Length: 334
Image (cartoon, rainbow, N blue to C red):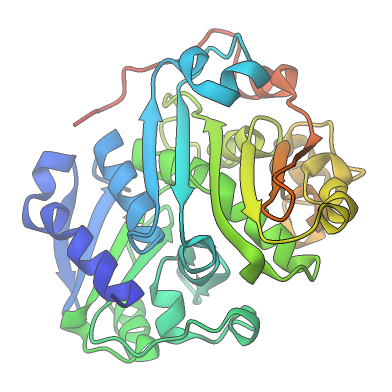
């Protein structure tokens, strides 16, 4: 099934009964816009659905309250006090690079959003698609916007035009980073971060057969402080993310690239993200690109069956970033 069609079908329950997810649906220029965490309170259920839609329903996303009992992650961080978000896909290139990666921004004179989801494959302008293919011309399109405001009508119509679908065929899911749904769907990008890192390093990502990722979920007590949420969600992956990739490649190639697939491969590693962001003048593009990777990565050679681990957890930095008081689970749930 095409990426956009799969996502469109997945979110039918959300569009049909947004109230059940703490969301609000509206029409802007004929485009369906679902507020999952801008003015609407949203919910964890909405965040899980947004994360799956961002992956074109090619991934499994779950939130676990008891991190200590969750397999390999428990061995890496036995005393993790935070809930964890797990993600897995048997089609990681399509799910993560063709859909989930926030590879472009929507920017006008009065609006800004980081955009992701399978609508990227419909628009197909990013150079990444020259490598991975997977462009499509769907009848419907689904986009995810990380923004502090709902998109104005002219932006909605432009996105429909760019995607080659009528306004009625476009669905936009919107949440600010500091919202329950927004925070969860960003933390669900641990696997995507590792795939994008491999692609940036020139590795043939088509060799990645399947993958999974785990990262701690920050507390939802930020109000509208998106800057703080950006810091926490980045720290969750850079210092607390664990990814496992099964790759059809020999051990030597994995051992060669492994040290560069983790955040500790960057000289900037070791400081909370917000400190680095402020030092860079709040300019993402001034930050070292090597930093944007999970804390720990297991590369499994399907040629030999051996597992090679790189990087390491930094619970101290995650705890500093999230706050020492422990997790706050008082946020809306559905």
